Amino acid sequence: MTRIVSGFAGSLTLQVPKSGTRPTSDRVREAIFSALEARDAVHGARVLDLYAGSGALGLEAASRGASAVVLVERNPAAAGVCRRNAASVAASARAAKVAVPTIDVRATTVQSYLGGAAGPFDVVFLDPPYDVGDAELLAVLTALVPLLPAGAEVCVERSTRTPAPTVPAGLQLARHKAYGETAIYWLAPA
Image (cartoon, rainbow, N blue to C red):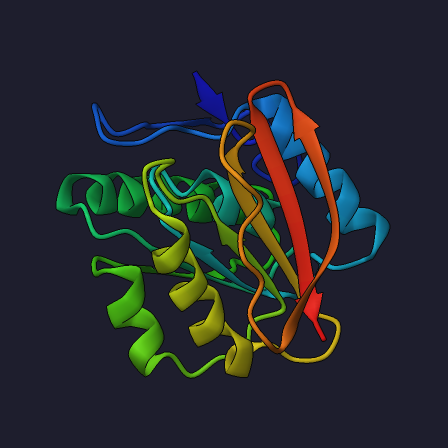
């Protein structure tokens, strides 16, 4: 079961695509958001969730005060799940009588979206399938660089069995940490 951990939609159960995705565990999401909130990076942020799957990372940000979230998911069934989850989060905001964040779901490839994205994005989540190779991930990170303002946070989730992502010019590795089989790499504009 995947759920929103905290914020106005805390405990809301999210739908998960039947196949083709690997949802980030509650434990890892809580660690990610604890780090972001310690830096006051979520409230009012413009968030981009690439390889969104169920949209859990972006929607967690929305629940915790992000002003705008874009969920990018190429699989049509998973994009439909993102839309339903986004509607549930928006309904939770209305029920809590808080401002409803803008949540946009894009059913397209990450590369296609980034080719026309306007930005800027304060927080970016990349949780690609573990079989996405380093060359593809490097191309995505390179395309992100012009969309990031100073102080942006980029969170890359990978398997601990794969090497650290190659960091392009314009970004730098700020820190990384492993949580069981999951490795989180924090990148920042250089």
